[in-house]
Image 1 (cartoon, rainbow, N blue to C red):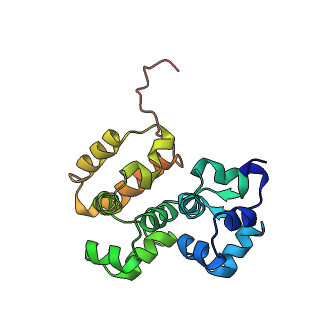
Image 2: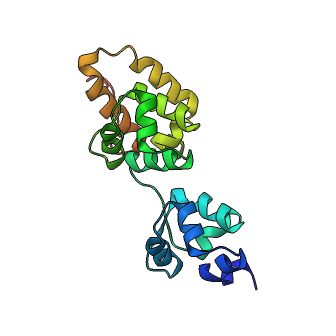
Length: 187
């Protein structure tokens, strides 16, 4: 019998772990973890490595055992990287000299951090800018992200919010770049 054929509850028992131990490793309540274990709740993608570590499994095995929901929004990726780094919102806020409420607003998608902060967040979390922006899925490289950060530093303060929204829209695929041509160009 392979691991793929065993339910999560059996894998937890085989790893000799209590519900509370695995729930704590995933930063979930016991009740939330039980829902995952019994198939009543999907596991967020950023928790896959934590579950794999808790059960001594390869992370690649987890999606065949439980339903996994990948992170979708920029804020969810910030939260995921923060949790992977083992940091609390207040710790991140302290490192950035902002209030914990600001970090919470970023993670919930109520606000977007300035691009310079995105670079700082990546450094604090020990990840790439692409990990936060999901640019890797769009074919952008860390070098491109760094070039964007460098150019962004030259944008006047009054235009940074609009510029950042444009860049994030482009990186996440929500927006298409309009083509510019002159009237003499053949269509």
